[in-house]
Amino acid sequence: MAGLSPYPGGGPTLSGKDNLAERRRSSRHSLRIPLRLRVWGSSGATRDGKSVDISEQGALLETDLPLRVGALLDLRIKLPEEITGQPTTEWRCKSRVIHITLASSAGYTVKAGVHFDWLDASRK
Image 1 (cartoon, rainbow, N blue to C red):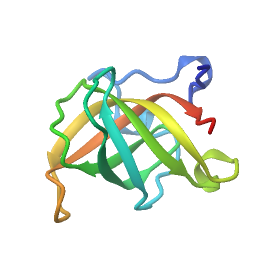
Image 2 (image 1 turned 45 degrees about the vertical axis):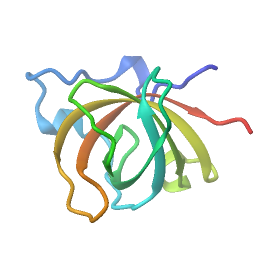
Image 3 (image 1 turned 180 degrees about the vertical axis):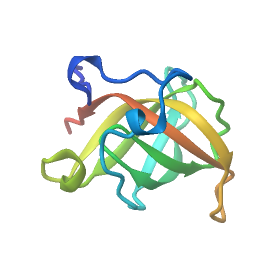
Image 4 (image 1 turned 135 degrees about the horizontal axis):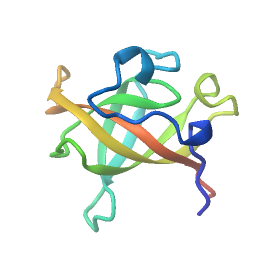
C-alpha cells in the first residue's frame, strides 16, 4: 500500500528543540470524528475512539486503548474535505503518540496527541 506523507520534504521532527509554532504548521479543526485504532502491528482487536481536534499533521484523540508516548498506531478515520482537500474518505493513518493526558469524556480513559507519519486512502 503506497502511503502519502502529509509533509513535503519529510516534514518537521518532534525533538525537544522544536517549538510549538514549528510543529503546528497547519490549522486545527475542533471536529469530533469517530475513529478506530490499534497499536501498529498488533494482532489485537481495534478499539473505538474519537478525535477532539484534527489537522493535516495530526490529531488529539480520546480512547480507552492503553497507550504510551512513542507508540505507533494504525488509525482509521473518515477525514472531511476541509482537512484533506478531497471528498470525505476513510483514511488509514500510521500515527505516532507524542503526548498523553487523562481524557475528559465519559467512556474514554486517555487523551493522546498523535502525529500522522503517513496517510493512505482506504480502498474498499
